[in-house]
Structure formats: C-alpha cells, structure tokens
Length: 115
Length: 108
Image (cartoon, rainbow over all chains, first blue to last red; front, side, top):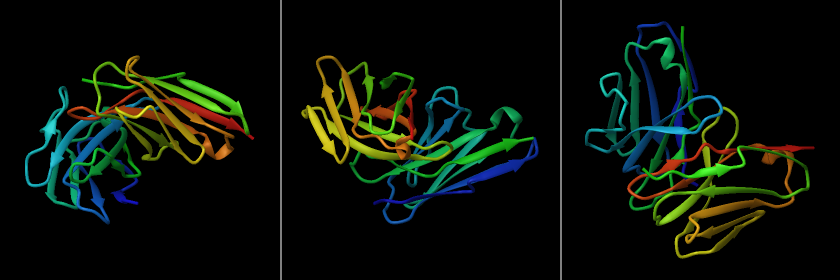
C-alpha cells in the first residue's frame, strides 16, 4: 500500500523557536497533502490543504503566518510552526492523496511539545 | 462543512464479541470512509463505501451505508485485543471531515 513518512515523530522545543515537520510520500506522487492537528482524545482538525506547486489553503482560524506549509514537490510537504508557544503543543498528522482518489494515506504523526 | 459523527464515543467489549460503531453525517456524499487510529499514531484507512453501495465487507469488517438516514455502521466481528483503537468515519465532498471517533477497547 501507499506509504507516507512523517518526521520527526517527536520533538521538544523551547518557546519562541521554530519547528519543521516533514511529510513524504514514499511510493506514490501526492498531488494533495493535508495537515491536521489532534488534541488528546479528540478528532483530527484539518489545518490546511496543499497542492504541489501552489499555495496552501488554510482552514478558518488557522494562522498561515504561524503555520507555514510548503509543498515543493509531489513527494514532500513541510509544516513549519514558527515562534512556537506552549499552546502549540499538540499531535500533528499529515496525509497525502494522489490523483482523483479520495483515500488519504496518513503519516504516523509528530508529537510537538513546546516548553 | 460536512462531518461524520460517531457513536458511541467509547465502547468496551470482551475478545470474541462483535463491535458495532455508528456514524452519522449531514449532507450528501460521494463516499464514506472508515479509519483506525492506534494511540499516538497516524490513521490507517480501513474501508471506503460509495454512495451507491449499501454494504461492503473486508475480512472481519462489515460496513453498511444508509444514505436516506445519512448514517453508516462499522461492524468488527470476532474482535481481538489488537482491535483496540479509535475508529473514525470521514465523509468526502469538497474535502474530508472526521468525526470525533469511537474509542474501542477489546479486553482479552
């Protein structure tokens, strides 16, 4: 099946620093990638959708200047949490889909802890 | 935006029993998907059922879809401890939205 690799799986950073999370589709071309945020025991909240080569579409309430998304190639998307604060601590999950298929293939997630 | 809403929120059963989870949604769909998430991990796609399908099977999984009631159910038969996870339904449309999930615990 399709494999999506997300790195790092866990990161701890100091308040005010920036953190980059990578999402790679290993065996397929991901025309669309999604970034989600998940709080404990809650559902996934879609943060943004990105198509290769174009700007990401952010969901209402998500600060695009704080959560920078780059989808530079068909296999890589990155999420950068800029000037991270403790309230940004969360579980971030990426997913990727290809072509017209509606199935999303998910990365394993990144647990971000901001001290 | 469309969203799947699962119930129950939590379900605890013994190994070998069947587990049934339900999902309701609000607007028209092209398909509905069920995903599984182990604690602290990403989601794994289980099964997709199209709007013109009423039932679909995959191994021990059985999914039904009732578009008139805007609801779907996921049945896991002969459950195992390894089935312990959260299960989410998601509807399509212009984009995908996830419900809050059902936390299933299968006791050995």
